Amino acid sequence: MVKKIIVMLIIAIVSLSCSRLQVKDDKPQDPEFLKHYNSWEIEEMEKVIQEYVIIDGYTPETLRYKSMFEDRKIAKQELEILISKVRSEMLENNLATLQDNMSTSVRNKATIRELRKVDFRGFRIYTSKVSFDSNRAANIVALNLGEETFYYDVNYEYKKEKWEIVDFKERR
Image (tube, rainbow, N blue to C red):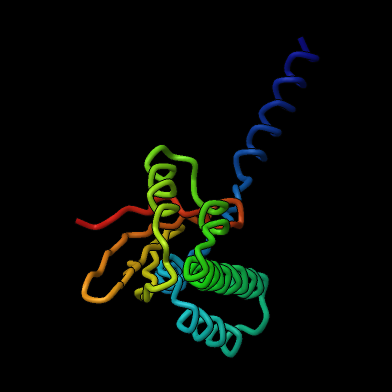
């Protein structure tokens, strides 16, 4: 009987102490930083971090924000490089980078087949500014040949630290 009471007492103490443990959330708690982080506003994120450093110094949270900022900054640069590389390769009739970075949907495969039929050497290619939302991005690509212009909506997704073109469809 005494053993049962001791065991029950130990279980009660362990369960009470475990219930006080907090699960640490890796996401930042600051709504201002989150807003800039989700919309990929690099300059604004940097300003928020600088304010934190001035006020609080280099705390673990500030260092985590700085790390998240650096990851976003690099990812944004990688997308800009990808867009530039696809654009320059298309002007040389090379769709390798475009195809390598496209998701394997039926629509994207059909789009690649159609694009392979086109000689892009006489085209002018324009790209709009990229808009970001969480782990997605989008822009518009315009292919201009003389008086004719074709517009494409391009959607990107950032997965596993790599940008993937999930949608490349002609605007109608």
